[in-house]
Image 1 (cartoon, rainbow, N blue to C red):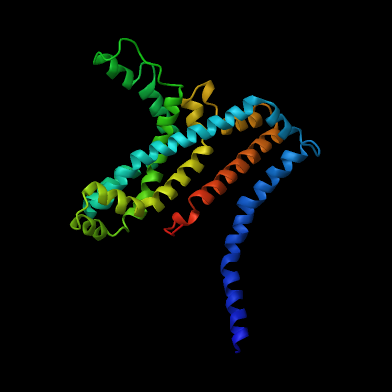
Image 2 (image 1 turned 180 degrees about the horizontal axis):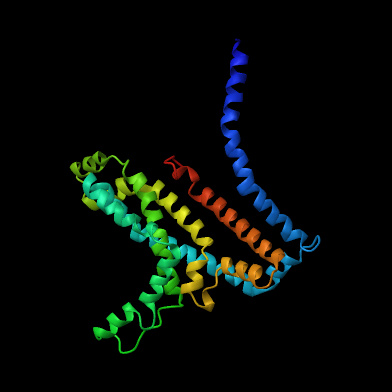
Length: 284
């Protein structure tokens, strides 16, 4: 067998391996998005009115802004809370890490709906949190915590925090702590060694976790629907109303495409500013 025939056989074998994945990707990703894109232009006939309706009404743009604002807030809070937890997980012994990892993964063992109802009980007007505040004399009357942006952020952070921790931990566990020790032995303080050695090495985890949490947060529906108020409507809730109550599939499809386009634009900006190579540890 000649060299060219060997290369041809190798290429054929590679295509044989990836064909099932390509078919699955086309069926569960490309085909549905294509149908949604066509429906946004062809419902009931070829038209741009669904997109014009979105850009003419300020209320729809406000929903988009609320969606991105909540997603950014949840991502930031998840990063602030998740970073020290992931740092702790990377520094403790294997035995302690296993127990702590169970605590991190416990939210995955409970239904998403159950977790949201639990927060309704905790944050309600006569819920656990208000009873504690009133019992200790901190407040005289119950605080309005449920059906607020605060409740939405709390509920979504609870859902997203394990994803952030796992993304950070997967990078932190591979950081050579000898570099930090070398920096301290050369006269750097612990804070300087952390800021100039450890933190830059953990940035791929920060980038991956932030991107993952932000994209997941954009499509949240149950949490803002149960814990949020009228001023916290996210675009997933608006799409649900258009489909289930108004049966306006064309406008709902246009909303989904607009959200996808805005997400891809933000993704492009992220890549230009930070570089997707930071996610897998490359150098920008």
